[in-house]
Image (cartoon, rainbow, N blue to C red):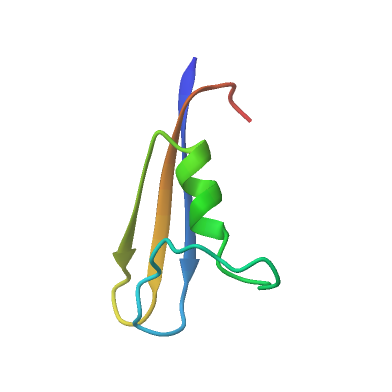
Length: 64
């Protein structure tokens, strides 16, 4: 079994995302909740220059 490292970068804005509870009718605000449920580890880091990267480690998965 291997670990999978996933990274998603957003080159816009300086504000780092934070986990929150989205309202029933809201279209946004669920991404980090899904990451938190699926990943063994995850975090958010600022990018060099502008933007941020969300990373997640999934353990025990099959290689893609």
